[in-house]
Length: 167
Image (cartoon, rainbow, N blue to C red):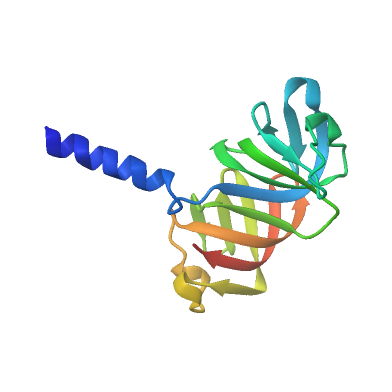
């Protein structure tokens, strides 16, 4: 019994450390409901009740500082299809889009990866980087892999990736 408890504790502690990556999205705020602690980013409902909010100058921003159209970098955890709970929100001046998370489904024929209800289309000339920076192909991305995608939002829960890294 002690061995089982130790193994569970070891696995839990290992995941809390730097080995487990947080989910992340970057994009423009479509809708902000600060009174309810919710922001919509490209069709993803982001719950922000306990999130730390920062601006580029670290001037002590809060959720009421976020406006529709603001570019946000959000770290947290996907909690269901198209839903995330944020732990940190950075208000940025602009940039490209991103989504990082676990590939729930990989459709090689359609060149698509699904991350928490978001369909990521892998563009034909997308750069795909495997573990340790080794070039990879879409066929080498298994369901369950943690992926970091850069590109642009093309609609609600739709993302076009020009760069993908396995992490």
